[in-house]
Every structure is written in structure tokens, then in C-alpha cells.
Image (cartoon, rainbow, N blue to C red; front, side, top):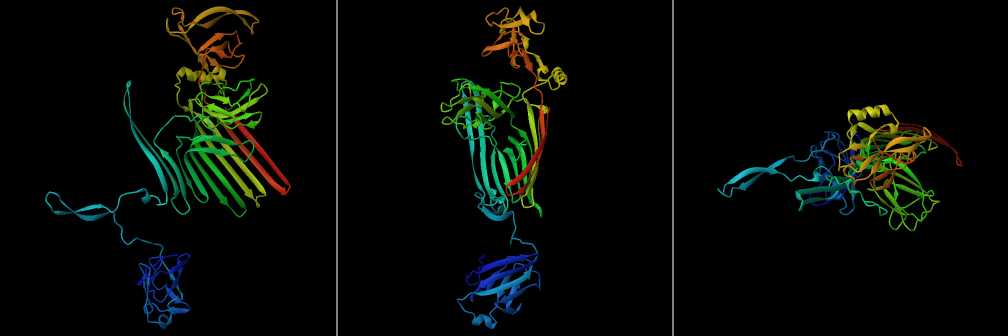
Length: 528
């Protein structure tokens, strides 16, 4: 449908059929119409032909054609115009060839205007922009945009004046006929974890730009990378980076490809517990190597009790404190000694930047009877990009000698800080040694911060596993000697060890009959 202003204010209906450089426009006209506007400019001379109903009009005598602007002006010399019904519509067909160019009547960045000088009262010619810049200059006007700008001042009795500012913006809409964009942008960096007391979480620091096309799409920023469709190669991570998705169709079948390169927000691990009678929690989560000083990535946990997945929320099954890595079950979900608790989650220990490369391809052939796919991904720490750790040359030598043995990647956690500055005193005592099967003299450290003369040691204890350490935790920040290899803690510091994990998975299936499907899968993995 196209509205064309005629000499007497009449409009016509246009239906354009295009094939290469040749064009055909069909107009529904009445007797009063005189001027028609084609959809194209730069008409090729001699390529035009005009038909009114079944009669061909003569160029120059029955109509005039403006080749540059694509305007057709009808003359009234032919008898068909005088005998034409004034109310019934008639068909006018115009065939032509045109160059693939289209220009506006005028282009200009600035325009000349006359302003009067307030002092001399003289008129001066100055230039100004034709119009102010707007987002619609870059994108279409149907792009929905909203956001907020925050400006603030923070003052306090024990702090200086601080200026605060923030910008949040969301966009959604089409930037072309086949391309859609969805974006959430911010210049804030808010390390606030949401509270794990509700079923749904609202992440306040998620920044991304997603572009969707007919067969291609891409995402930049924070997103959830989910690879599924097979048994061994499933992957679900919160990452920050880039992801591309492509769909294709050939004569044999269809398929799609996912390729992603990103930095993971945390490490994935699983904790398993045996419930305690009448103890709803909190159940403390630990890292892959027993680390207790971790922060759980919000929304990544999957909690199962006796194989049934639980629902987060005060009014549901459990709540979680992401900052302290603790899970507490609600009263409607009673825990007993027979309860088997399994928790999958992602956590951050702020040691190394962790990178992820992933590829997934699914292919369907012969009317979806044959399906095969492949998944390849590698997730690993970047040893050259530590976050909150600093390694000395001696630390690097210890890590090199330890290889993959984590218990060897340690250094002493005992520091002599001087009288009145420590919390532990050193004592020599006899203890039974399982190795020599007799009592031996060993130095131990006893918590005695009140002894200002002898408490000269500051000791850091690390969890090494049940039966692997000599100390047990008595209270917060307090440890006591339990016997040689009779405890879970040792006076050592673990050095951060970069780790990596790689997997390649291949799966295939064939629909033999409506009731018979044959499928198989093979996977290889490597952990370092």
C-alpha cells in the first residue's frame, strides 16, 4: 500500500513485484488521477511501458516520465481518459528498469540562519545543525529505550566527601527488518550478592548485548551458557564473554552450531552430606579442595534431598546465604539422619582468572532420522593472571615441585610475631605416632592469647581432610591439638594451584522405526 499525492489530492494503491533490475508497478487509478510516484529513481531511458487496462499508452503523448525522480504524469489526450468511469477503479501497469540507487532531495549537515546581535542590532548569518543528534539517528525509532542516571554525595563523620554516580540503560527492538537487539548496559560495578531467600533472583550487575537475526545470533557480556542434548557433555555456567549461534539448512538436513569464549564467574563443584536428626542447618558449603573461604555465585545452586530437587525460598524448601556459603532448610522440609543431601553450585575463591572455550554442534539428516552432535570445551585457570594472590619465587618453586599433589603445595602457616602480638604458644609434648607405632616428641601450638610473654606465634590452620591433620577446630579462630593424624586441620597455608579441565563428547542416534531408536555416546576428559 503506497499513498501518492496526485494533482487533485487522490491516492492510489501500489503493488510492486521486483525481479533483479526489472520492475513492475500496478496502480489502481480513477479518472481524476494525474500524477503517479514510482518506488524507484533513476529510470533507464527507453525501458518504460505503460498500460491502462488493455491499452498501451504512448510515451510523450499520453504520459510523461521524470527519469530522475520516477514521477509519471498522465495526459488527457486519449479517448480512454474521457470515457473512463468516474467511480469505478481502473488498472494502470508500469514496467521499467531502474538503477539500484535512491537519494534524498537534499543532504546537509548545517543550515544558514540569520541572528540579530543584541548589542549592535545587526543581522549576522551563522550556521547551525539541521537537527540535534538522537539515538534514532543510529537505530530505528521503534527501538524501546529506558534507564536511569544517579548522582549522589556521601558524607560522614569519619570519612571525606565522596561523589557517586551511576548509569543504567536497557534497550530492546529491531534495528533492521531481520535484526533485533536486546541490551542491558551500566557503568556501575556493584559487588552485592542478592539474598537467597526468594524463589527468583534479580541480578543487579548483569550487563549484556544480544543481537538476533534470522539464522545468526550473538551475545556479548554476562549470560548463561547452557550446552545440553547429551549425557556426558552437559555444561551450565554463568560466564562473561561472547557467544555465537548459527542455524543452517542444506539439501540433506538442518543443524545448529554454538561457539563461545568467555571468563567464568566461578568454579563448579558438588557437596554431599548425610543429614542430622532435627538439624535444619546451616549446612556449610566448601570448595572443590575443601576450601571454606568461598562465595557462592548467586542462582547457580541446585539442591537435592533424596534425589528430589528443592525449591529456594522462605515459603518453599530452603534458603541460602551466598556470602557465607550456608544452606538452611525450611520447616516444611524436615531433615533426618536418613536424608541424603546433594548440592551442586558454582563458587569463587578469587585466585586466578578462569577462562572457558566451548563448542557444540547438532546435526539432523534424512528428515531428522539421523542425528549426531559433538561437544568440546576447556575450562581452566590462567596462571599468568592471578586475582587476589601474589606468588614469590619460592612459592612458584613449591608449586613446580608439587605437580598435581595439592597436599605438597603448602608452606608453613606459623609466623613468629613477637611477645604480646601472637595467640599461640609452642609446647613440646609426647604423642603416639601411627607411623612408628610408639610415642614421639613433637612440638604443638596451644591457643593462649592471654600469655603475653610466651604467645609469640600467629598460626594459620587449613583444612586438609579427616585423618590427615593433627588439629581440630574448637571454636571460631581457635584450634587445639588432637593427636598425630587424628584431626582435620594442619598449621599450613595452601598455595593456589591453577587447574584445568577439558572434555570432548560425541553422540549419534538413528530412528530405525517409529518405535525403535538406536543411540550411542563416547566422551574423553582430562583434568590437570
